[in-house]
Length: 217
Image 1 (cartoon, rainbow, N blue to C red):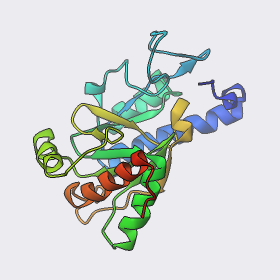
Image 2 (image 1 turned 180 degrees about the vertical axis):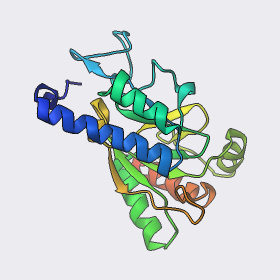
Image 3 (image 1 turned 90 degrees about the vertical axis):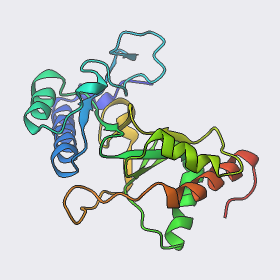
């Protein structure tokens, strides 16, 4: 993964910093999602210092994931004073969770779910994957739902307690993250999020069909 060439342009770098701060503040104060700065790419390497980092430039490190917050003052200090080039990450499991799957399966599942008129929450496109954001779920409850399905492909990933996702726009991989369906306000403020249960079967089926090479929908 290469460094972002826009960082060499002071004007572009300043605009990108403003966008990252705005994204972090919006997530923390309007969506009520805890956020934390992610690592950055420095000279083509992850700022965490691990030469074999599996997700360079897009994971929490310092501060750690447990520091994720909705406090606007802390968010401003992080992105204005400490790490203005860091991608904003949302900590999953507290007020938002997600299920992600390969992009091709995710796009088809999204179209199918929309055709069924199932209410959908925010959806993000990330490099190679789609993430469907849902209400928080416990691993026990998720396990019970998955146990009722005949087979669950390994290409699905579950972003619950202890997980995180990059938010658009970011830095590193965050530069290639975008909203497919943007967040929309819930009746009591925050963001409306669907329960994972009604969506899970269709997401699993889309991933199964992709893995098996069968046509999807």
